[in-house]
Amino acid sequence: MDSPPRQNLGISAYAWLKHDIIRGVYPPGEKLLMSRLKERYDLGIGPLREALSQLVAERLVVAISQRGYRVASMSLAELNDIYDARSQLEAMLLKLAIERGDDSWEADILAKAHTLSKVVEVNTPDEVLDVWDTRHKAFHTAMIAGCGSQHLLQVRASLFDQAERYRHLWLRETVFSEQALEKKRLEHAALVEVVLARDAERATEMMREHLLTPVPIITDVMQRQGLL
Amino acid sequence: MDSPPRQNLGISAYAWLKHDIIRGVYPPGEKLLMSRLKERYDLGIGPLREALSQLVAERLVVAISQRGYRVASMSLAELNDIYDARSQLEAMLLKLAIERGDDSWEADILAKAHTLSKVVEVNTPDEVLDVWDTRHKAFHTAMIAGCGSQHLLQVRASLFDQAERYRHLWLRETVFSEQALEKKRLEHAALVEVVLARDAERATEMMREHLLTPVPIITDVMQRQGLL
DNA sequence: ATCGTCGTTAATGTAGATGTTATTGCATAA
DNA sequence: TTATGCAATAACATCTACATTAACGACGAT
Image (spheres, chains in turn blue, orange, purple, cyan):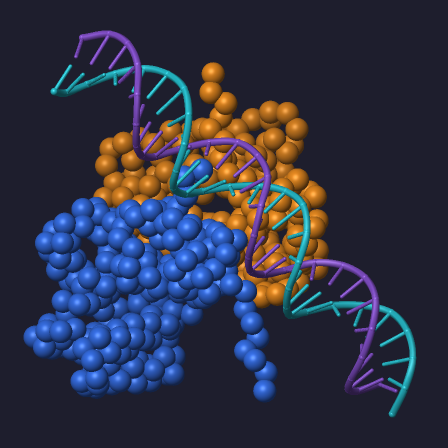
């Protein structure tokens, strides 16, 4: 048996750091001490710098010459800008998907919508959160996958990553509230309906609204937690 | 007098590599030998790996574990996908700019359009190319700057960078042909007119078409040069 | 021809040297 | 006493040189 073809440490450092930044292990604006990271991940400085460079390109980390790296800050202004950008972009992708999507695209939407609606209590609450989030992402991705452009999907993914820290605040408020979940279920069902009916006009409008609903909730959480 | 606040070598390595890749100094798919890069830029391996990691995140370079880095390949399929993505995205940004833009946005469009139309023979043909390209970019950026979203602009810039190698092939065909330049002048003037008239419908349609005009030309160049 | 072995080349990782920034303590002035 | 400047020191980021390990290529055997 082959041992898994060993990938270089920079790549795994990247994955770990990104994971931890998104989950809020390091608060926004925190300095990322090389010595600390070295210890925490048991890696050398070289691979860490590689990983951090990639995260700089993705705007999750900022580098200041001769003064190391910091976690990118968060703000209400950025929250609003990211969600505005995301809702506009996603609406456009949906319009394209409705124009260009084929039968298997439609089928996949139904499949993913079904899977999402069937999330039941698994084990720990945290596991519910993970499962619901994974399926929720898969559902939304399926909706716009029909747009047919790798590069548009890639650009969307990049915005998504930047939104991830904000999204995570919203998730904890939503997944643990049966009422909020039910509301989402209805919105999703309504979206599926108009999308399959290929009503681009209404679908894009609904998508924009759907994507903006977390903003007030996240604003609230941020103010409560004083993450400003 | 302060010496310029010394920035770390990784950052300048990044700038040089990006510049050279976009200009075609390294052909698509070429292996980027550390030893060669080290010699060419007179830098150590550490900073180079940092720079390459960033370029991987920007998709100009691909990394293969244990086998180093290569320049991202180019293909007709990618050409079409990138230009499709760009034209759709730019059209959307233009629509937003028309909805949201203020007076200074309008003024800036006129200013940049004027500057662009006044490119005269400067010195070498290569200098004409640089000047025209710079002003052309500034003009298009001014048009969509009114959209008001930093993140949408950033996402656009990222697609732009990925298109840059293809665009460069087109530039050389266009800038040195008085006929082609004149055609662009007319298209730009027409765009300015409908944008200032805030006719979103026609403006987005014209922008999409305008952005796709290079595709057949680039296709042609790529086939002639056998860059496939 | 195909497979395996060995030597070469190159990528990767680490440790230590170097230079830069931040901090601390102390002296001096308001 | 409180504030301000300065110097010494500590902490840190950054870079390079070397050690390690994996991929590549040539050559020979089956």
